[in-house]
Length: 134
Image (cartoon, rainbow, N blue to C red; front, side):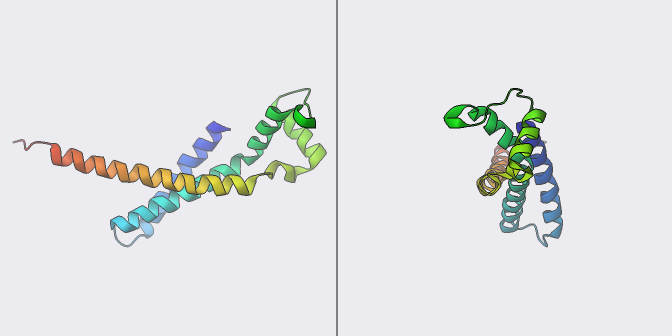
């Protein structure tokens, strides 16, 4: 789940950043922060939405047998997916989708915009501390 989440997250962030940067009329710092916030938010939302079914499976496996929760005889992802769909219908795989998206979208937006701002800041600090060379 984490590998898929990270792959979707990074790919979406880079693609959105490129698209939004091309739409931006100027390279003003105010517009750049909006690009990073938006691209990060979209990336977090999409990655969390795509991986929600795997999160449901993970949670079912972690909670099996606790407080009357279902127990699985086979703990392969495929078998658990089949059992969830058979017992609770396919929409059960999207349980918690809204909460995951509402958590990951702003978290990713904050994370990416902070990362990009620090990268710019450190680049400027480095440039100003490099001595003049002939």
